[in-house]
Image (tube, rainbow, N blue to C red; front, side, top):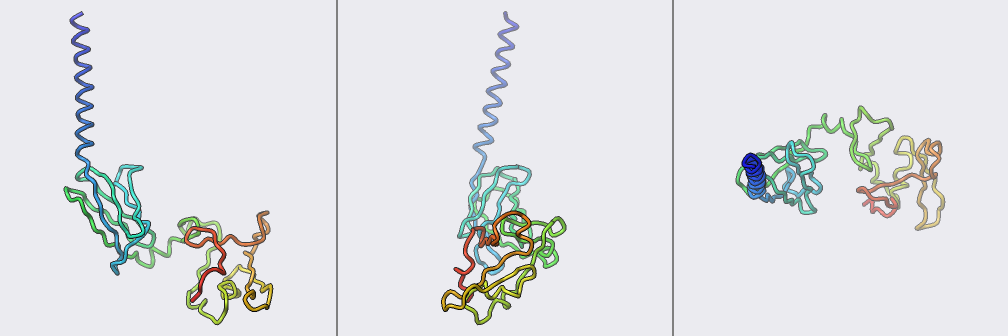
Length: 202
C-alpha cells in the first residue's frame, strides 16, 4: 500500500511540475507590436510576420503596416514580403519593433512571377506570363482594354461598338476555349475579380 501511495505522490508531483512549467512559459510570453516600412518610409501592407521554427504562429501587417504578435524572449521574428529581402530579428525584452524592408535585387525578383492568386517560381510555371510596361498603356484611349489590344502577346481583342462611351474592347486569352470554360478572361485586380474597364488608366 505504501508503494502505491509513493507512486501516486510521484505522479501528482510530475503533473504539477509540468503544469507549473507550462504556466511559467505562458507568462514569459511578451506581446510585440511594431510597424513595417519600405525604404521610402511608406507602410507595407500584407507583410508576413512569423516566428522562426514555430509553424502556425504568425501575423500579417494591416493597412498601416502595423502588426502584433506574442512570442517568448530570444525567439526570432521573420519578416517576408514579395519583392523584398527576408529579414530576421531577435526578440529580447523589447516590446516594440520597427522594421524597414529592403527591396530585393532584380535578379531575385525575376525568378518569381506574380499571378492573380499569389506568386510562383518562374522555373516551375507551366503556363505563359507576360508583363506590360505601364508607359505602353498611357495612350489616348477611353479604356484599359483598348490600350491592351495589340500590346500583350496571346491576347485577342475586338472592339464591339463605336458608340461614344461604349467603345470598349472584349478580349480573350489564346487557347482558353480548349479548357471548356467561358469564352472571356478572368480578370483579378489586387486579388479580386473586377471589370477592367472600371479602372482609371490615368
